[in-house]
Image (cartoon, rainbow, N blue to C red; front, side):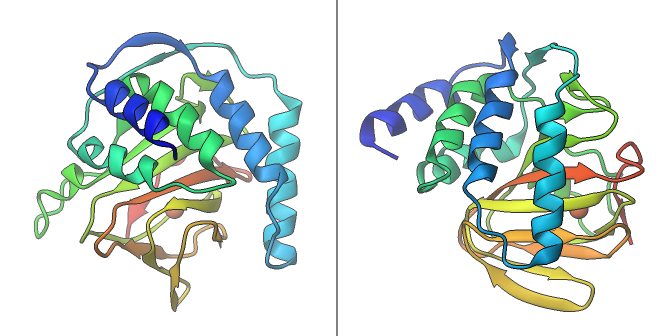
Length: 220
Ligand SMILES: [Fe+2]
């Protein structure tokens, strides 16, 4: 990101949460980014095609964003500033939306890790309870602080991630690997998965599709 764009990121990130900003430009930026992806195999290619078709089908209501504050957003500026092409346009859209993003954590507190809810958050812009309403597709971003384990979890939805910034250790179905920016990661329905950040925050775009995108994720 250019110095000017980085300065605008900082200006937006220093703002208080605001409401009334439209979410549709985010969806357009996501669609443009997905259009230039090269899927590493047929399963991801199939899911990528499904997500793009659902976006192109539209049909969601046009609600405005309602910004919420969350401690993990202290890492958003660093995460956005390190995003490189071809995801830079989406990063710039996220910087514009920053004070309006609806950050949530959503899991119950864990006894052995009571501060986890301050290290992880999700801003879902399209979905059953998101500003843009859809019962068949969720779109959002996950932000995880450095040095954090997002513990093993599962959900009925099929999940496709695109790493925007930060190289973390991703595990799913008993296999683990470091996934750099630009990586596409598929989590089939109910497959247990986790992420563990290193020195950098992780910012990743996600989609949910399948028969049930309403049931929330749960720790295993
Ligand atoms: Fe997941």
